[in-house]
Amino acid sequence: MPRLTPLLELAGQDPLCLVAYIDRTGADFELRGAAGPKDAGSVEGRQSPVHRTASGDWSQRHYQLKVENTWEHNAGEIAEALGSAYEESGAELVVLVGDVRERPAVLERLPEAVREVTVATEHGGRAPGSSSPALEEAIEQARQEHAHRHVEKALDRFRAGRSETGSRADAVEGVPALVEAAQEHRIDTLLVRSDGPELTTETWVGAAPDQVAVRRADAETLGEGDPVAVRADDALLRAAAATAADVLFVPPADGEGADVPAGGLGALLRWAHEPSAA
Image (cartoon, rainbow, N blue to C red):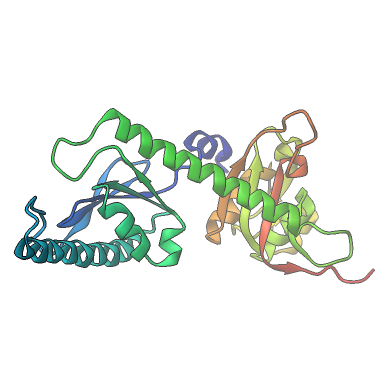
């Protein structure tokens, strides 16, 4: 079995980000991920009237009201298209770039689930050539902060999900418990702390990803006639990948007892584990 942990750790947490470049007439969407920028479509709203005038007579005030109605209409069109692009792209984060008035108007019209993962930046715009180092830095910072929050949220769930022996558990740690969860396809999110001592624990695996066991004899019981000894982290990563589980690398222990998960390996479960009474 190939060594998997160093490759994933090197890649780091890399959330897929949907960037929306907006103005008062429409928006262009772009996906940002490990593979670089990728076009994700666009939307065009009403093209006129979009510019106010300085005159204060009745006719001009009436015209300005039409302008504001156009802005509001286009904000709704952009929000609807952005919500659809978010769902279709699989993005985890949205960054709004562009017109200072249109940004909040679009934000308030987004579906709640999208609004919760949306941030705005004052740098850049929709016009060609408006990109800048400050915009690139803002997008990258938003991605890093999102990744950090994602890990912290998972750790909070993990701490809350652990329980005393003999009671219901929504999270587990330690190689034996994780192996059992992998056999039953119960791992929802695998947590890996790269400095954990249990990553190198010997486990036994067969040809199928769920053929993983703590002892050779147990692997043979699972139907594998010729099991192979591998590191626990590699065996669990293979099982997680085969069952479409998420994998998160968590910060190393800080020397003050923050060694979560203990041993370096833990998991949030797809359904709770209720140990049988002894």
